[in-house]
Length: 492
Image (cartoon, rainbow, N blue to C red; front, side):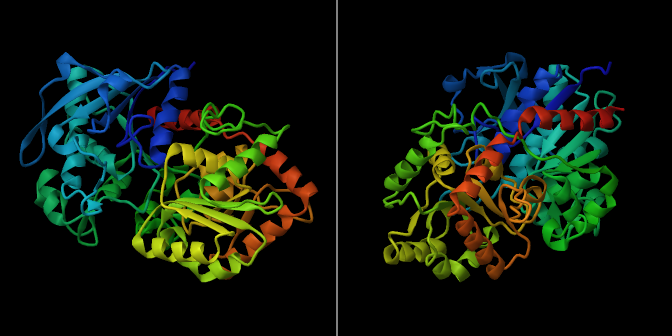
């Protein structure tokens, strides 16, 4: 029988405490199931100013106060508080330094809409603090599981600074990459917070990429194991410059240690039968509540809905990378189809003005709102007939998996996790439960949406596709078992 492991899980965000994207959902879910397997798993995140102590019963840890954290050019003080993930016995530690983290936003200054100027220093401090805190705790994990660029320096520190320390030298690391488009890229002067610049920053060093510091590259080079969000995506990033955002060669060199694990779904939250954030629950056997949600959603956004017309939803950052440039090329054609569209999310003034102009011209076809919260997200997924997620690259989101459970069929590009989880409907074999466009082009996207709308009008076929989608199971139990296997690869 394999021994149970001590796993330190580190992230810059975790639901429900603080969330800016799907990373928080993953970190808030996976540890629960690893704990159920018997592992001693603990979480570390920064103590942001938006996290309310009283709401989550967060308490001070007396022996973890005034901890000295060494950066290369100075020493900074950290305090640590503790709580549990709600409804679990998973302990979470909050690393507090008010100068770095007592802010209203996680990564972006709301006044400038740009990254906080000291983001590099903030997450160097967070990463270095882990080592000082572990010694104070007298807790030696077998594995440190890092997530994205904000924690990617931890494997670097472990191999370059703490490798001779007997407290740390047996620890193994895994780096999960959820968002490859954000790599923690900074000017070389920030090296002074990390280590001796002459020793670590030079052409083609682990931390250097195209003349700048790259946190994620350092993690990829030094982590014992790297994983991303699907097997297909793990292959894409070591063979494509576009998909890898310039790190193809780095991934190629680590190919033997690169894995893909699809994210899971917490069905205690994402299930139309028990969802507390939608006005009408429903099930695979009784879809009447879905129709009611469709009307509720449309009315709340000022759109008169017609039951015989499909409503196609989009939740996204309204930016070029998420294919809104391509959508603008075909928007007039889309609005001529026998369908309606609801777009919500966050974005910029360019697209806001464009879509608002289309709303005025086609009020019976389009609703658009730059707003994103949990309740609207749940209602969108429950109330739409289809969901359009046309991202060019792996988007690190689980919306398509949520949609399947809610009988909302996804329209996706053949990239990343979509390849592994969405089966294109084949009219000849009658198999499949979604719509996939392989060529990333306006014409291919338009054709696929048009075809999906035609299939919708065949009620007998559509009902079978919805039923097939809602039967699928992407629970975290299975995902946790895949991570379990990766952990034992590391320690064995």
